[in-house]
View 1 (tube, rainbow, N blue to C red):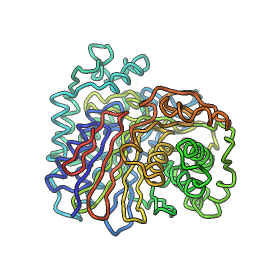
View 2: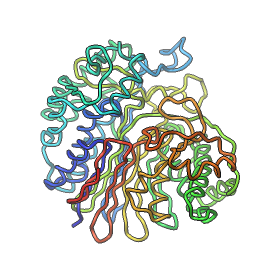
View 3: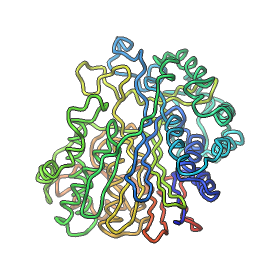
View 4: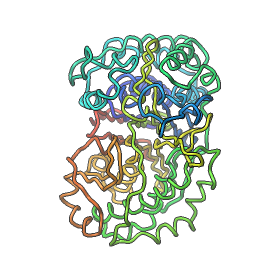
Length: 526
């Protein structure tokens, strides 16, 4: 038996997951409860109208993945967007891809049912329903997102539920989501499949069509979440896992596999660590941007990028003293990552997203569900690697991570933050594993971000001021185009990790940049 642990970027989601674990539920059941709750309490970051990716680990077995990302609607053709230079990022025409998160919940629960008798769905969704009915406290993060998007999406269909009499939301006030509560109650009674084959599907399809979306009821009927084999790479410290295409999981693995090869070039300090990880990031992003697309479009086996030959060639391009010229194109997005461990040592690394804050901005009036805008990652250029085509998936920044270390530790870890996800994963993992810092410190310490995120247009290296005070002069001397940003900045994502030790005890940590909470057995860290 192991001790339980849960971490999430919102404390109410952690409490929802913790309650299920304490009642003997599985890691998957706890994660579904938390996923439903965080869709309510962090509605700008994720929701039922978005995507999900799972890494699930049973002791002694290879981890398995679930790809619950949406594919483009059957009517989502280049002709549908004739006259547009690119797919709109907001509004009805931004709702291009199916929502996969709810199908992923069910796919995962099917696995959980093989482990032990399942808890009723009504129990798993009750916490989320209560929050939607009774109201959520508006956080600083939600207030900030409300202000940021107001001019773009305040007048879109259904979005009024996220306004205060037409105005932006105010931190500390309460927001009730009665329509979403009714939908969650319906799904709890009728089953999650109703989202794709029942009344909820019919309501969503009608609302989306009315908003100008190419999505139709047939797209709901045709959707399936898929079990997938994770990518993996062996390193000197253990085996690392992440998701395959269409995610950027390959980038996260390349960065750490390269650092495993080159970290001894550094002096063991934070500045050299950051420089080498940033240079590894550049190599990883070049490979990612060249190859990652819908799985059907891959020109190579992504696992081949993790071969000794491939990694050695990339490592040879990294200089200890000189930064490689940048930029390359970047992605951004808003997401949540959560991790947990149950009493049987089963662990989950999970990520759920709408893409941008409030996704497309389209809220289904009859269900209260916010729809994603992940389809704006497609290109309308013929022959482009990301060219829009029906039934294909766009490129995803989402990638939950997992590691099995040689010393017996197992680690579920991840973050939100678009382009920053692989970088933050690398920072927290390297600090914790290679530089032997405490887990909480590995997450809280000053971070950096190469490239663009959260709607920013600059591709430079952003460094939190507490870390910049130590590292900026050296990094600039090595050629990094660096700008300092405020410390403990939400720009750097909301990271978290859960560690299970071979003795059965756990450690969990959350990001002080979030509204999160980490619990490990009877200990708490907020």
